Image (cartoon, rainbow, N blue to C red):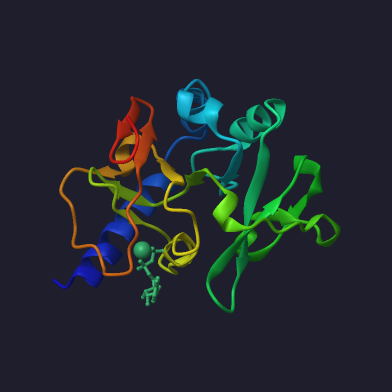
Length: 197
Ligand SMILES: Nc1ncnc2c1ncn2[C@@H]1O[C@H](COP(=O)(O)OP(=O)(O)O)[C@@H](O)[C@H]1O
Ligand SMILES: [Mg+2]
């Protein structure tokens, strides 16, 4: 099995699991995962963050967004650029500045688009379908984050949020363009990888 097929198989398997994950558990787990992040030094020390906004069954991030705004951080959310499969971090100050955009995700309404230089971001909250314990990540298969990570500061910390069932103990073969994360948070807490600690 080539590594690509391997990734695709895992992607489909975990996406199916996530689809059937109970909505009440989505809420509960998201709150627990969010609290691990919000109560961390990593979070308190960050000044400019980027956080994804979740699909229905993904780990929810609205609570993280609200906490970051309350702490006067600059909060950006990723805006998808379909043509280049790239992300543009856009600063928003309130979730009511959003409307449903590409892929059914919330994105800023036109008048609220406010691009921020990716190099200024110090903490990135990353979604994913599956993760291994080395920080390798499987996304939805378009490589948006791999493309975006080439443009960020080398000191930026990239943290994935996942339910425990999204963590794969055995690694797969990552592709040359896959950019590993620095840490993960699940219902069981932080899994530190590199750069932090
Ligand atoms: N930095 C990059 N340079 C070239 N191609 C890339 C890069 N990042 C992603 N890609 C392209 O994006 C596609 C999807 O990447 P993949 O890692 O499988 O997706 P995901 O990270 O969303 O799981 C790959 O087939 C690859 O061609
Ligand atoms: Mg990838």
